Length: 206
Image 1 (cartoon, one colour):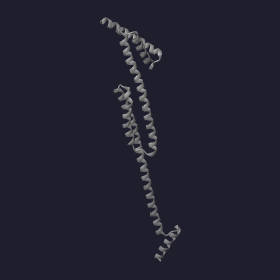
Image 2 (cartoon, helix red, strand yellow):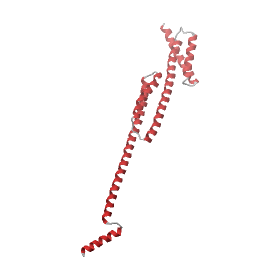
Image 3 (cartoon, rainbow, N blue to C red):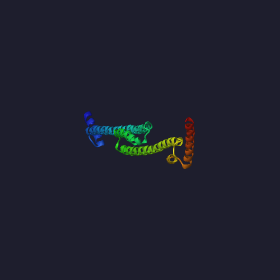
Image 4 (spheres, rainbow, N blue to C red):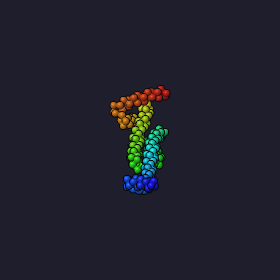
């Protein structure tokens, strides 16, 4: 009778859930396996996203650092090479090294698009800045040389009026390429006064 009661209770429990108890256990196990597999897959995906985000961050930092370093190298090149006609070639040499560093970065697709825009802007900006700096330095070099020569000519007792006029025009034009005319006129008068002082010294030395 006890065995019959146990059998009846088992039947009753099974009928309440609509499936045999053995089948229900299999479904639970299968569900657990499926959930574990799903959790594992999600973990792999999340891990991949985190890894790529970290690589993007490292690459962005490296790209920014390479651009900052390139700026410093360009400035140093201009300081150690006083001839501005060499500056563009120097810029291109520095830029090639920076571009190689940029090309080695492990950007994701979207980050690469964004960083490429920044890189292109940097390259264009560096070209413009070096061009402007070269122009300004060329103008300043002209002022320096023209000013030196006008002092030499005006302080020379043997210089002709034609030589003086020609050199004065060269110096005036050089000054006005950098300064307003009123400022250039003042600088011209100061330079002529310096030339007159040197002329007096030269005469006294004869």
